[in-house]
Length: 120
Length: 106
Image (cartoon, rainbow over all chains, first blue to last red; front, side, top):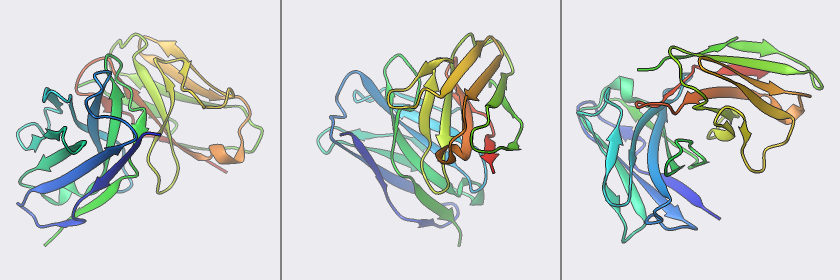
């Protein structure tokens, strides 16, 4: 059974880089039927798509975050990552990773989420 | 960006009620809309995709309809476990965007 698990620091200082890992188990990240995504949810607010990555490295980002976001992938460890630079308090949110079928943009499997707070 | 507007923002209902939630897109998105259910402290769960297709494992009391700009999610007979926040999402064009959510509460 597919599982996704986010990990990383729960507190990041303003202006620093937020770095999260999504570990995929029960399935291969190189399965060419899927790509992998990040979504976030500020406390008490709605969902915001951040970006998607295919195992080949092809990536798509939300333009509102594109200048600050990278979504690397490591097929040897079955993990993909989120790097968000120059964070501010507005980046405080629960961050989710998810699986997305190729050719159909539906977030069909989600990790449990990780709360990241930006504060000094 | 395509804006997704959900209404109402919250509604009160009882077990057994028929409940209809609405989502409106800022432009024609044909049937490229998905619906998610989110319970407190948990990740969203896909309920409906492509406007009307039930995700595997989701009870048949959930249904979706609509095309163009107006979409609905209907729960035919509300169960206790259905009290949650429901989000719509457009998959027509990037950036993929979500509505602000509708809270279904007692």
